[in-house]
Length: 206
Image 1 (cartoon, rainbow, N blue to C red):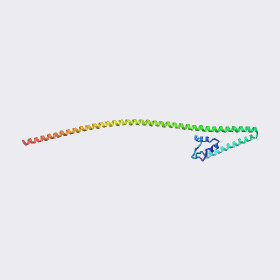
Image 2: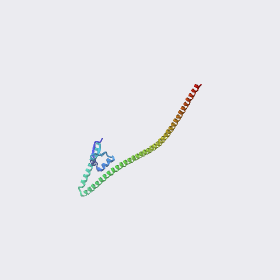
Image 3: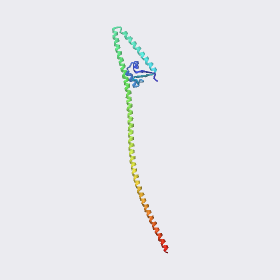
Image 4: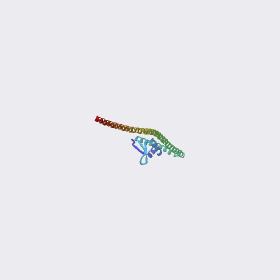
């Protein structure tokens, strides 16, 4: 867990770099930090990291103080003033150069991170496009199979209607046959009754 939270601007002063460099280091993941709800960028440090930061700043300040004292001694003479001025100009240029190098380094790191993020997004998009293509192909296959099933169903319905018609025709024919048989039975029955009556009449006559 982080024990110390510093404003990014304060951290930049401690380290001796620009605020923009600190922000880029946070964005690229070199430093732990973020922009919070108050709109301020913060750096998160452990207690050990914070103490090391203070010690480094103290050593840097002591070294700077020694250089400043040496330059003040040089300024005691006119020639020394010229040399001291030249050294101060060179030191200022070196500081600017160092700051520029720090900023360029943080920008390159941030660029590498962004390129990696872009590549990850591209890979994810390709994966999603591939998955979408597979879904579309699966949907087309499903639609094709559905159409085949619909055609098969229509064919079966047509066959069923034909069978229903055939059964209806057979039923009609069966009904006709039954009616004919009933008429035949009735005719036979009537003939038998007629014969019975004729026989009865003959028996009476005899």
